[in-house]
Picture 1 (cartoon, rainbow, N blue to C red):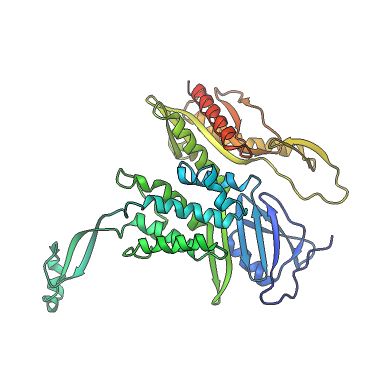
Picture 2 (cartoon, rainbow, N blue to C red):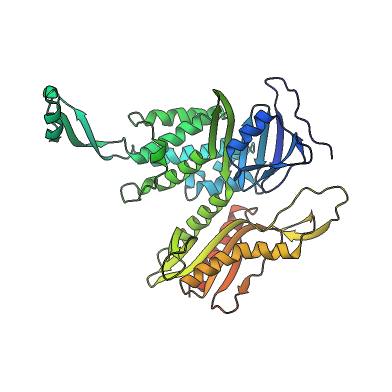
Length: 436
Protein backbone atom coordinates (compact mmCIF):
# COMPACT_ATOMS: atom_id res chain seq x y z
CA UNK A 1 0.00 0.00 0.00
CA UNK A 2 1.38 3.40 -0.94
CA UNK A 3 2.08 5.65 2.03
CA UNK A 4 0.80 9.19 2.13
CA UNK A 5 3.82 11.39 1.53
CA UNK A 6 4.97 14.14 3.81
CA UNK A 7 8.13 15.03 2.00
CA UNK A 8 9.83 18.31 1.22
CA UNK A 9 7.50 21.01 2.45
CA UNK A 10 7.77 24.76 2.49
CA UNK A 11 8.52 26.14 5.99
CA UNK A 12 4.94 27.29 6.45
CA UNK A 13 3.36 24.27 4.76
CA UNK A 14 1.73 21.58 6.83
CA UNK A 15 0.14 18.22 6.07
CA UNK A 16 -3.07 17.71 8.02
CA UNK A 17 -4.46 14.34 9.07
CA UNK A 18 -7.95 13.92 10.51
CA UNK A 19 -8.80 10.76 12.46
CA UNK A 20 -11.58 9.59 14.73
CA UNK A 21 -10.85 8.59 18.30
CA UNK A 22 -9.74 4.95 18.73
CA UNK A 23 -8.75 4.58 15.08
CA UNK A 24 -5.72 4.16 12.84
CA UNK A 25 -4.52 6.00 9.78
CA UNK A 26 -3.17 4.59 6.58
CA UNK A 27 0.66 4.49 6.46
CA UNK A 28 1.97 8.05 6.24
CA UNK A 29 5.50 9.37 5.77
CA UNK A 30 6.38 11.78 8.54
CA UNK A 31 9.70 13.65 8.83
CA UNK A 32 11.92 12.45 11.67
CA UNK A 33 11.71 15.84 13.41
CA UNK A 34 7.91 15.65 13.40
CA UNK A 35 8.06 12.09 14.70
CA UNK A 36 10.24 13.13 17.63
CA UNK A 37 7.79 15.92 18.45
CA UNK A 38 4.83 13.53 18.25
CA UNK A 39 6.62 11.12 20.60
CA UNK A 40 6.93 13.94 23.11
CA UNK A 41 3.13 14.23 23.31
CA UNK A 42 2.93 10.79 24.88
CA UNK A 43 1.94 7.33 23.66
CA UNK A 44 -1.15 7.34 25.86
CA UNK A 45 -2.49 10.14 23.65
CA UNK A 46 -1.15 9.53 20.14
CA UNK A 47 0.75 6.41 19.11
CA UNK A 48 3.10 5.93 16.15
CA UNK A 49 3.24 2.34 14.86
CA UNK A 50 6.06 1.06 12.66
CA UNK A 51 5.41 -0.27 9.15
CA UNK A 52 7.44 -2.22 6.60
CA UNK A 53 8.57 1.13 5.18
CA UNK A 54 11.11 2.58 7.67
CA UNK A 55 10.09 6.11 6.70
CA UNK A 56 6.34 5.54 7.13
CA UNK A 57 4.27 5.12 10.27
CA UNK A 58 0.66 4.44 11.18
CA UNK A 59 -0.89 7.02 13.51
CA UNK A 60 -3.13 5.41 16.14
CA UNK A 61 -5.46 7.46 18.30
CA UNK A 62 -6.72 6.68 21.80
CA UNK A 63 -9.38 8.22 24.04
CA UNK A 64 -7.83 11.69 23.68
CA UNK A 65 -9.49 14.03 21.18
CA UNK A 66 -8.26 17.39 19.95
CA UNK A 67 -5.34 18.63 17.88
CA UNK A 68 -1.63 17.90 17.88
CA UNK A 69 0.40 20.30 15.75
CA UNK A 70 4.10 19.90 15.00
CA UNK A 71 6.26 21.56 12.33
CA UNK A 72 5.07 20.24 8.98
CA UNK A 73 2.40 17.93 10.36
CA UNK A 74 -0.92 18.17 12.19
CA UNK A 75 -3.16 15.44 13.57
CA UNK A 76 -6.76 16.35 14.31
CA UNK A 77 -8.61 13.77 16.41
CA UNK A 78 -12.38 14.16 16.33
CA UNK A 79 -14.81 12.56 18.79
CA UNK A 80 -17.46 10.10 17.66
CA UNK A 81 -20.19 12.09 19.39
CA UNK A 82 -21.42 15.58 18.48
CA UNK A 83 -19.24 18.46 19.66
CA UNK A 84 -22.14 19.74 21.76
CA UNK A 85 -22.03 16.47 23.73
CA UNK A 86 -18.33 16.94 24.52
CA UNK A 87 -18.87 20.53 25.61
CA UNK A 88 -21.88 19.59 27.71
CA UNK A 89 -19.92 16.84 29.47
CA UNK A 90 -17.11 19.30 30.11
CA UNK A 91 -19.56 21.90 31.39
CA UNK A 92 -21.12 19.57 33.92
CA UNK A 93 -23.68 21.28 36.13
CA UNK A 94 -22.79 24.83 35.09
CA UNK A 95 -26.06 26.08 33.63
CA UNK A 96 -24.37 28.84 31.64
CA UNK A 97 -22.53 26.32 29.48
CA UNK A 98 -24.83 23.32 29.63
CA UNK A 99 -26.91 22.00 26.76
CA UNK A 100 -29.08 24.47 24.94
CA UNK A 101 -28.86 27.63 22.92
CA UNK A 102 -25.70 28.90 24.62
CA UNK A 103 -23.75 25.91 23.36
CA UNK A 104 -24.19 26.89 19.72
CA UNK A 105 -22.09 30.04 19.94
CA UNK A 106 -18.89 27.98 20.21
CA UNK A 107 -20.00 24.58 18.95
CA UNK A 108 -21.31 25.70 15.60
CA UNK A 109 -17.98 25.58 13.81
CA UNK A 110 -17.09 22.21 15.32
CA UNK A 111 -13.71 23.36 16.64
CA UNK A 112 -12.86 21.34 19.72
CA UNK A 113 -9.98 23.58 20.77
CA UNK A 114 -11.88 26.84 20.87
CA UNK A 115 -15.03 25.31 22.35
CA UNK A 116 -13.17 23.45 25.09
CA UNK A 117 -11.08 26.50 25.93
CA UNK A 118 -14.24 28.57 26.23
CA UNK A 119 -15.81 26.01 28.56
CA UNK A 120 -12.78 26.24 30.85
CA UNK A 121 -12.71 30.04 30.77
CA UNK A 122 -16.42 30.34 31.51
CA UNK A 123 -16.06 28.05 34.51
CA UNK A 124 -13.15 30.13 35.83
CA UNK A 125 -15.11 33.33 35.24
CA UNK A 126 -18.14 31.99 37.10
CA UNK A 127 -16.03 30.81 40.07
CA UNK A 128 -14.25 34.18 40.45
CA UNK A 129 -17.13 36.48 39.52
CA UNK A 130 -17.62 37.66 43.11
CA UNK A 131 -13.90 38.00 43.69
CA UNK A 132 -10.92 35.72 44.14
CA UNK A 133 -10.74 33.24 46.97
CA UNK A 134 -8.59 34.51 49.87
CA UNK A 135 -6.81 32.57 52.55
CA UNK A 136 -4.01 32.80 55.08
CA UNK A 137 -0.47 32.02 54.00
CA UNK A 138 2.62 31.92 56.19
CA UNK A 139 5.27 34.35 55.02
CA UNK A 140 8.77 35.19 56.14
CA UNK A 141 10.33 38.46 55.06
CA UNK A 142 12.58 41.23 56.24
CA UNK A 143 10.68 44.17 57.66
CA UNK A 144 11.66 47.48 59.25
CA UNK A 145 8.60 47.17 61.50
CA UNK A 146 7.82 44.22 63.73
CA UNK A 147 5.12 42.05 62.17
CA UNK A 148 3.95 38.73 63.50
CA UNK A 149 6.73 36.75 65.16
CA UNK A 150 10.32 37.94 65.23
CA UNK A 151 12.70 35.13 64.24
CA UNK A 152 15.23 35.61 67.03
CA UNK A 153 17.42 32.69 65.92
CA UNK A 154 18.00 34.29 62.53
CA UNK A 155 18.65 37.66 64.12
CA UNK A 156 21.26 36.03 66.39
CA UNK A 157 23.02 34.54 63.37
CA UNK A 158 22.80 37.80 61.42
CA UNK A 159 22.90 40.66 63.95
CA UNK A 160 23.69 43.18 61.22
CA UNK A 161 20.08 42.85 60.01
CA UNK A 162 18.70 44.35 63.21
CA UNK A 163 17.36 47.31 61.19
CA UNK A 164 15.20 44.97 59.10
CA UNK A 165 14.89 41.65 60.94
CA UNK A 166 13.11 38.60 59.50
CA UNK A 167 9.52 38.18 60.72
CA UNK A 168 7.08 35.32 60.23
CA UNK A 169 3.42 36.23 59.90
CA UNK A 170 0.09 35.05 58.50
CA UNK A 171 -1.11 37.10 55.54
CA UNK A 172 -4.69 37.13 54.26
CA UNK A 173 -4.13 37.04 50.51
CA UNK A 174 -5.45 35.88 47.15
CA UNK A 175 -2.06 34.29 46.42
CA UNK A 176 -3.30 30.81 47.36
CA UNK A 177 -2.97 27.44 45.64
CA UNK A 178 -6.54 27.44 44.30
CA UNK A 179 -5.91 30.69 42.43
CA UNK A 180 -2.53 29.40 41.26
CA UNK A 181 -4.33 26.50 39.59
CA UNK A 182 -6.99 28.63 37.88
CA UNK A 183 -4.45 31.22 36.73
CA UNK A 184 -2.20 28.49 35.30
CA UNK A 185 -5.13 27.16 33.27
CA UNK A 186 -5.94 30.62 31.88
CA UNK A 187 -2.28 31.16 30.95
CA UNK A 188 -2.17 27.75 29.27
CA UNK A 189 -5.35 28.48 27.29
CA UNK A 190 -4.07 31.91 26.28
CA UNK A 191 -0.92 30.38 24.83
CA UNK A 192 -2.83 28.01 22.55
CA UNK A 193 -2.81 28.67 18.80
CA UNK A 194 -6.02 28.98 16.83
CA UNK A 195 -8.26 30.58 19.45
CA UNK A 196 -11.04 32.81 18.21
CA UNK A 197 -10.72 36.56 19.01
CA UNK A 198 -13.67 36.31 21.43
CA UNK A 199 -12.11 33.45 23.39
CA UNK A 200 -8.70 35.13 23.49
CA UNK A 201 -10.30 38.37 24.71
CA UNK A 202 -12.05 36.54 27.55
CA UNK A 203 -8.75 34.88 28.54
CA UNK A 204 -6.96 38.24 28.65
CA UNK A 205 -9.73 39.76 30.79
CA UNK A 206 -9.62 36.82 33.19
CA UNK A 207 -5.85 36.94 33.49
CA UNK A 208 -6.11 40.57 34.66
CA UNK A 209 -8.47 39.36 37.40
CA UNK A 210 -5.60 37.32 38.87
CA UNK A 211 -3.39 40.36 39.42
CA UNK A 212 -1.34 39.69 42.56
CA UNK A 213 -1.44 35.89 42.13
CA UNK A 214 2.01 34.46 41.51
CA UNK A 215 2.96 31.91 38.87
CA UNK A 216 2.31 28.37 40.03
CA UNK A 217 5.06 25.93 40.90
CA UNK A 218 4.51 22.85 38.66
CA UNK A 219 4.99 20.61 41.70
CA UNK A 220 2.26 22.53 43.50
CA UNK A 221 -0.19 21.97 40.64
CA UNK A 222 0.28 18.20 40.88
CA UNK A 223 -0.96 18.15 44.49
CA UNK A 224 -4.57 17.40 45.33
CA UNK A 225 -6.39 20.42 46.79
CA UNK A 226 -8.69 19.46 49.68
CA UNK A 227 -12.24 20.78 49.32
CA UNK A 228 -13.69 22.81 52.18
CA UNK A 229 -16.75 24.97 52.62
CA UNK A 230 -14.54 27.96 51.75
CA UNK A 231 -13.35 26.73 48.34
CA UNK A 232 -16.32 24.51 47.40
CA UNK A 233 -17.50 27.06 44.79
CA UNK A 234 -14.14 26.55 43.03
CA UNK A 235 -14.58 22.77 42.66
CA UNK A 236 -15.98 22.72 39.12
CA UNK A 237 -13.51 25.30 37.82
CA UNK A 238 -10.54 23.52 39.42
CA UNK A 239 -11.55 20.23 37.80
CA UNK A 240 -11.71 21.83 34.36
CA UNK A 241 -8.49 23.74 35.03
CA UNK A 242 -6.68 20.45 35.60
CA UNK A 243 -8.11 19.08 32.36
CA UNK A 244 -6.86 22.16 30.51
CA UNK A 245 -3.40 21.96 32.06
CA UNK A 246 -3.14 18.26 31.21
CA UNK A 247 -4.60 18.79 27.74
CA UNK A 248 -2.31 21.58 26.60
CA UNK A 249 1.16 20.23 25.96
CA UNK A 250 3.91 22.55 24.76
CA UNK A 251 7.31 20.96 24.28
CA UNK A 252 10.55 22.73 23.45
CA UNK A 253 13.52 21.15 21.73
CA UNK A 254 16.77 23.07 21.20
CA UNK A 255 14.97 26.38 21.47
CA UNK A 256 12.28 25.46 18.93
CA UNK A 257 8.70 24.64 19.57
CA UNK A 258 8.50 20.91 19.15
CA UNK A 259 4.81 20.23 19.62
CA UNK A 260 1.66 22.11 20.33
CA UNK A 261 -1.28 20.09 21.54
CA UNK A 262 -4.69 20.52 22.98
CA UNK A 263 -6.22 17.17 23.83
CA UNK A 264 -9.12 16.15 26.03
CA UNK A 265 -9.34 12.67 27.54
CA UNK A 266 -12.95 11.72 26.86
CA UNK A 267 -12.63 8.68 29.17
CA UNK A 268 -12.01 11.01 32.10
CA UNK A 269 -14.61 13.55 30.93
CA UNK A 270 -17.24 10.80 30.67
CA UNK A 271 -16.41 9.51 34.17
CA UNK A 272 -16.79 13.01 35.66
CA UNK A 273 -20.02 13.57 33.72
CA UNK A 274 -21.66 10.35 34.93
CA UNK A 275 -20.54 10.96 38.53
CA UNK A 276 -21.83 14.55 38.50
CA UNK A 277 -25.20 13.65 36.99
CA UNK A 278 -25.74 10.74 39.40
CA UNK A 279 -24.69 12.87 42.37
CA UNK A 280 -27.35 15.44 41.52
CA UNK A 281 -30.06 12.80 41.05
CA UNK A 282 -29.30 10.53 44.02
CA UNK A 283 -28.79 13.16 46.73
CA UNK A 284 -29.61 13.12 49.63
CA UNK A 285 -30.47 9.44 50.05
CA UNK A 286 -27.19 8.35 48.46
CA UNK A 287 -23.74 9.88 48.30
CA UNK A 288 -21.74 9.51 45.08
CA UNK A 289 -17.96 9.48 45.46
CA UNK A 290 -15.47 9.54 42.61
CA UNK A 291 -12.08 7.77 42.44
CA UNK A 292 -12.49 5.99 45.77
CA UNK A 293 -9.51 3.83 46.78
CA UNK A 294 -10.41 0.32 47.96
CA UNK A 295 -8.45 -2.46 49.66
CA UNK A 296 -8.94 -5.75 47.79
CA UNK A 297 -7.54 -8.08 50.46
CA UNK A 298 -7.61 -8.33 54.25
CA UNK A 299 -4.02 -7.10 54.58
CA UNK A 300 -4.71 -4.11 52.32
CA UNK A 301 -1.66 -5.07 50.24
CA UNK A 302 -3.72 -5.01 47.03
CA UNK A 303 -5.50 -1.75 46.29
CA UNK A 304 -7.66 -0.48 43.46
CA UNK A 305 -9.51 2.72 42.64
CA UNK A 306 -13.23 2.51 41.96
CA UNK A 307 -14.46 4.97 39.33
CA UNK A 308 -17.62 5.68 41.30
CA UNK A 309 -18.75 4.41 44.70
CA UNK A 310 -22.36 4.92 45.84
CA UNK A 311 -22.97 5.00 49.60
CA UNK A 312 -25.96 5.43 51.86
CA UNK A 313 -26.21 5.78 55.63
CA UNK A 314 -25.31 2.11 56.11
CA UNK A 315 -22.13 2.24 54.00
CA UNK A 316 -21.07 1.30 50.43
CA UNK A 317 -23.93 0.03 48.26
CA UNK A 318 -22.71 -0.08 44.66
CA UNK A 319 -19.48 0.09 42.66
CA UNK A 320 -19.78 1.72 39.22
CA UNK A 321 -17.19 1.54 36.47
CA UNK A 322 -17.39 3.92 33.51
CA UNK A 323 -16.14 3.08 30.04
CA UNK A 324 -16.61 5.73 27.37
CA UNK A 325 -15.50 3.17 24.82
CA UNK A 326 -16.18 -0.48 25.56
CA UNK A 327 -14.18 -3.15 23.80
CA UNK A 328 -12.27 -3.21 20.53
CA UNK A 329 -13.12 -0.66 17.87
CA UNK A 330 -12.96 -0.22 14.13
CA UNK A 331 -9.71 -0.58 12.24
CA UNK A 332 -9.15 0.68 8.69
CA UNK A 333 -10.46 -1.87 6.23
CA UNK A 334 -7.82 -3.20 3.85
CA UNK A 335 -8.51 -4.19 0.28
CA UNK A 336 -10.00 -7.69 0.16
CA UNK A 337 -11.09 -7.75 3.79
CA UNK A 338 -14.58 -9.28 4.16
CA UNK A 339 -17.26 -7.09 5.69
CA UNK A 340 -20.18 -7.86 7.91
CA UNK A 341 -22.62 -5.74 9.87
CA UNK A 342 -22.67 -5.57 13.66
CA UNK A 343 -24.74 -3.31 15.84
CA UNK A 344 -22.68 -0.85 17.85
CA UNK A 345 -23.38 2.49 19.47
CA UNK A 346 -26.93 2.57 18.11
CA UNK A 347 -25.88 2.33 14.45
CA UNK A 348 -25.27 -0.54 12.01
CA UNK A 349 -21.90 0.05 10.38
CA UNK A 350 -19.56 -1.95 8.20
CA UNK A 351 -16.79 -3.50 10.26
CA UNK A 352 -14.07 -6.05 9.96
CA UNK A 353 -14.78 -9.36 11.70
CA UNK A 354 -13.08 -9.99 15.05
CA UNK A 355 -11.86 -13.02 16.94
CA UNK A 356 -14.59 -14.12 19.41
CA UNK A 357 -11.90 -14.80 22.03
CA UNK A 358 -10.73 -11.20 21.72
CA UNK A 359 -14.31 -10.00 22.24
CA UNK A 360 -14.56 -12.05 25.44
CA UNK A 361 -11.25 -10.60 26.62
CA UNK A 362 -12.53 -7.08 25.98
CA UNK A 363 -15.64 -7.73 28.06
CA UNK A 364 -13.53 -9.19 30.86
CA UNK A 365 -11.30 -6.10 30.88
CA UNK A 366 -14.38 -3.95 31.53
CA UNK A 367 -16.35 -6.21 33.88
CA UNK A 368 -13.68 -7.95 35.93
CA UNK A 369 -12.38 -4.87 37.86
CA UNK A 370 -15.80 -3.84 39.16
CA UNK A 371 -16.62 -7.45 40.04
CA UNK A 372 -13.46 -7.69 42.18
CA UNK A 373 -14.16 -4.32 43.77
CA UNK A 374 -17.75 -5.34 44.59
CA UNK A 375 -16.54 -8.63 46.08
CA UNK A 376 -14.01 -6.80 48.27
CA UNK A 377 -16.89 -4.75 49.71
CA UNK A 378 -19.17 -7.81 50.00
CA UNK A 379 -21.73 -6.28 47.63
CA UNK A 380 -24.29 -8.15 45.55
CA UNK A 381 -23.95 -6.05 42.41
CA UNK A 382 -21.71 -3.81 40.36
CA UNK A 383 -22.48 -1.66 37.32
CA UNK A 384 -20.60 -0.72 34.14
CA UNK A 385 -21.82 2.44 32.38
CA UNK A 386 -20.59 2.89 28.80
CA UNK A 387 -21.23 5.16 25.84
CA UNK A 388 -19.88 3.19 22.87
CA UNK A 389 -19.50 -0.50 22.08
CA UNK A 390 -18.97 -2.50 18.90
CA UNK A 391 -21.48 -4.96 20.26
CA UNK A 392 -23.74 -4.52 23.26
CA UNK A 393 -22.80 -6.67 26.27
CA UNK A 394 -25.41 -8.53 28.28
CA UNK A 395 -27.37 -6.31 30.64
CA UNK A 396 -26.51 -8.65 33.54
CA UNK A 397 -23.64 -11.07 33.96
CA UNK A 398 -23.66 -13.52 36.87
CA UNK A 399 -20.20 -14.46 38.13
CA UNK A 400 -19.99 -18.15 39.18
CA UNK A 401 -18.81 -18.90 42.71
CA UNK A 402 -19.48 -15.33 43.79
CA UNK A 403 -22.57 -13.50 44.96
CA UNK A 404 -21.83 -10.56 42.63
CA UNK A 405 -23.69 -9.77 39.43
CA UNK A 406 -22.29 -7.18 37.03
CA UNK A 407 -24.87 -5.08 35.22
CA UNK A 408 -24.29 -2.85 32.19
CA UNK A 409 -25.97 0.37 31.09
CA UNK A 410 -25.66 2.32 27.84
CA UNK A 411 -25.68 6.15 27.81
CA UNK A 412 -26.52 7.50 24.36
CA UNK A 413 -24.46 10.66 23.91
CA UNK A 414 -25.80 11.13 20.38
CA UNK A 415 -29.24 11.92 21.75
CA UNK A 416 -30.73 15.34 22.36
CA UNK A 417 -30.39 16.81 25.84
CA UNK A 418 -34.01 15.96 26.70
CA UNK A 419 -33.52 12.33 25.63
CA UNK A 420 -30.17 12.09 27.40
CA UNK A 421 -31.61 13.63 30.56
CA UNK A 422 -34.43 11.08 30.53
CA UNK A 423 -31.85 8.33 30.07
CA UNK A 424 -29.84 9.61 33.03
CA UNK A 425 -33.03 9.64 35.12
CA UNK A 426 -33.53 5.98 34.17
CA UNK A 427 -29.90 5.24 35.07
CA UNK A 428 -30.37 6.86 38.50
CA UNK A 429 -33.52 4.79 39.07
CA UNK A 430 -31.59 1.63 38.12
CA UNK A 431 -28.83 2.56 40.57
CA UNK A 432 -31.42 2.95 43.33
CA UNK A 433 -32.78 -0.51 42.57
CA UNK A 434 -29.30 -2.05 42.66
CA UNK A 435 -28.59 -0.30 45.95
CA UNK A 436 -31.65 -1.98 47.41
